[in-house]
Length: 214
Image (cartoon, rainbow, N blue to C red; front, side):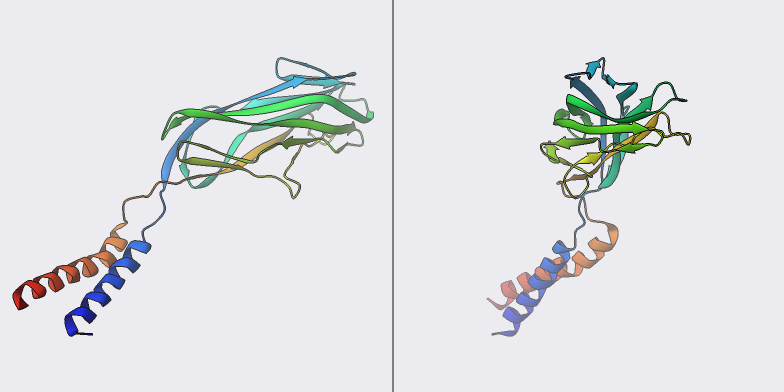
């Protein structure tokens, strides 16, 4: 291999390494959420985004429009459980026939919406408090434009909902969280540009040498 060919190969490799060091996008993502609890069977009734049974209520509190610098962990809203009367008690009480859909309405970087949906099953108890209640979304990841939302779940892919407690936890919130990232590429950071510059300059030198030796 000639000297020029070797130099050109080294420069190309250097440029490729520099390009591979370009960072993933850090981009503002703006959205709000809207949750809907529906259905209900047996003694469970759902009305206006609240389901009730045997003195228990389960409500979803939406997240107002908020901007985040992705990638990051975000709050999508909260399930809130309560028991009335707070001085009473109730054994294991099941919610039945309940469905829940959580819609994300994104305004930036690209407008759009998408939903996580699934069933809410299990029981709540109060004084002493216990819960087997969980939301079981049918899917835990979706995209809006180039933004990827991934729910934070337990090992079964579910979100456990806490029971109200007598120690200041009536009502008791359970946050729904997700990892948010974008698939776009960011402009190189200054340090990366310094790494990339010698490789690009070297390509120019090799090209000039080839022209002068012809």
